Image (tube, rainbow, N blue to C red; front, side, top):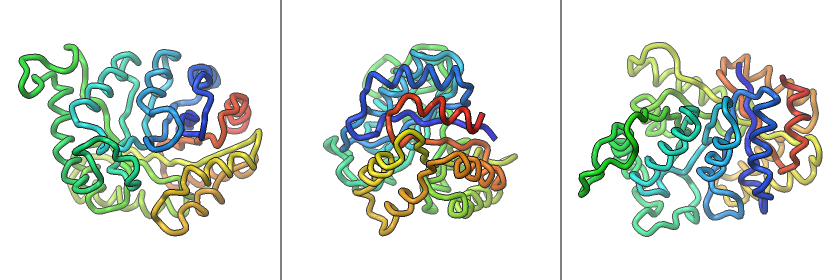
Length: 285
């Protein structure tokens, strides 16, 4: 199982200048992937910007949005941004997406929370068209340079529609920021949907958990603040109580996700303390 580390792009009032240094240090330490968390109505750094900064600061490490709220974007615009980041990185981006749950993130007129599932289904067609180099509607020009690729997709979410989209459009599934015992059911549902659709092999399965080693109290408060607007009752406490703050807890989480058959575990930071990159590497790599 590969081990990735999150970028602190959605830590409240993050010092944005730490992001390139964080990415470089993560690559030097040997992490497999850099992940971002996506939200608009929150004082962080946009996930696409964080991914672009990481792409420019590194040469080898994978890049993953986990997950980007795709339905808050016009489809052509997001497809172009994703293709641009992928090109700058040399083909290292995987776009993890979902339909979103927080109404305040939907700030673009005409792209509100209503009918976001149907919009997602239309946008997925748009992504493929843009990445194939087809002309933008109403223009003779494509949106992206020649020589690009279809950016790999992963899906988050636990609805039947999320699993349907995963099977139809993507390489696999991203779990929520929950203990492995709860991620197990979502992973099983993803495998079942994959098999029932006749897809060969197995879906790529990515787990996500939080960690904090330098300042655990600040990290728990930060995570609680970020998830405070989540509609699901009890989810905030669930995520906060699952922030791993010591070596034993982190190693146990890694073992549990390995036992689930996860392909990768992304450990997201609860603070923007740059030294946490090295502290985590000493434990898991």
